[in-house]
Length: 467
Image 1 (cartoon, rainbow, N blue to C red):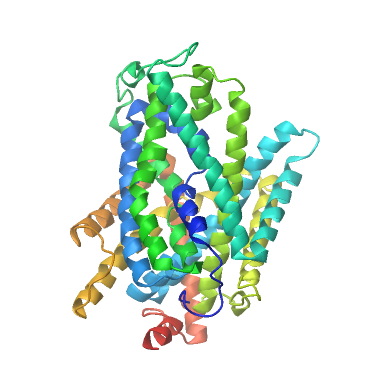
Image 2 (cartoon, rainbow, N blue to C red):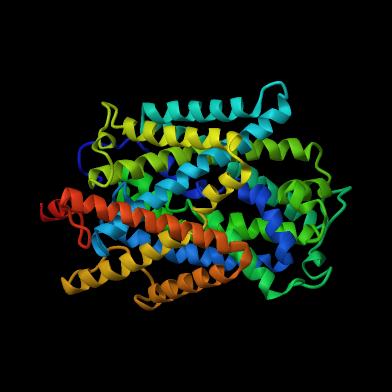
């Protein structure tokens, strides 16, 4: 369903979308998880983040081209439907929905772990379910509630990162008295810039690549704003400095101030360990508060994104029609509740089923980001060619078309092959592959029973385009 169609409200304000675009991608992975990547690859993890960041920048440019031309709450799923075929939009939509449903138990458990450490008398599962219920309620009322919560969550994250970068920069220059660390010598000490070889950098790149998934949410959210084309253009243009400042800037100062083989780096997290060495009091408590807010932000976005993708699938008759309903406030409440129920089941499963079983469920999402990126690239390639054939030109363009688009497609294909041959990523590729085959089988059988198209664009989109 297009942004101009009745149904979803346009309750997101410019400041909501702007802040979402700035900090929506920043999660606990930056504050805590980056320590594991640094411990794996050493200071050369900067290369891993730079390559992964460049891929995201190019993918967002391609997605921006399509989203500016046709804002849609289904975003890349709808574009895949139009450009590749009904099966592709169906597949990418359900894979993306599944990814964000799986994020719910992970983020809920992470938040519950922090709260449980403060209030040990309350069980973990109670915190996890309580946080999920609270954010579900806020998503049910209106999209403005989601935008308002996310605005303040994102603002806290931005302020925290800017403050961290300022303190770290002062420490590097030796301006903080009593600091145990200064300068940038650790970038080349303890075995050099690339102490564990390029293989470790490659492994870190495969890990860090998935920390950027979520950048594309702004194209989904912008469809519920008053001026989606302008918001998408601004968000896409800003992705370069966002990744450069928040990710590359943070990783640079951490690897400058903390030895990559510091035994506490991975366990404490990159931000906490850096602040401890600088001598900031209560570093753990400060980082825990920021991580809690970041986790709540990711959970909030997971519920929002999953519900909008489910709603979009329903408008294309790829999900039950009960999810293609909006309340009087323009919120797809059935889609929110449907996604929340599955998320709840995942939260409960995280505590009841054996860890090995839950890990297999998590592994099914391992390669979804790459499949989404691949679908975006192929869709942009085909949609641009369709425009050229009609003698038209997009208002917002991908750079160096079609060469950079093809380069992204080939790079993603190469990464998938590498993952398939690396023991630490094989289970992810295999699990995502099995899930993909099952979804395609279910979709094909369903299309045969309903008599809907499968190779070409869905009947709903075809009718909308004809109209």
